[in-house]
Image (cartoon, rainbow, N blue to C red; front, side, top):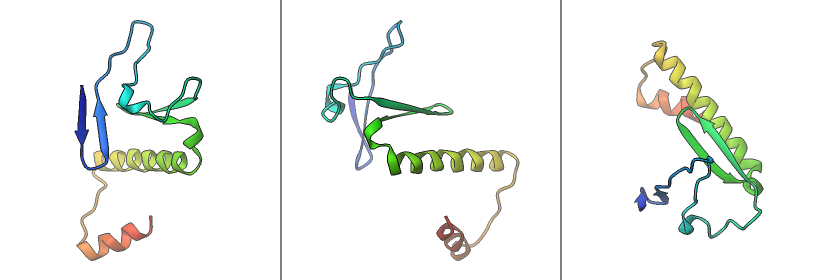
Length: 96
């Protein structure tokens, strides 16, 4: 089953075999060839799959995003979030 999600995001459903293998649907394989190396990043319940050749800058950005998201979730769970008005929020976001 193939689903379109948001503007530039697509999603499909696949099944894992008893040997731990999954099939990447054909519509997602057009840029992946036999023997290409792939990396899987696990962050809580999310799995991110990328071609190893596309790692450089984007990989670092994804890892940093995952790290910040995890830190924010931990602060939220500890009740450490704070309220601020819109302008202060934008100023804080520009520091990122």
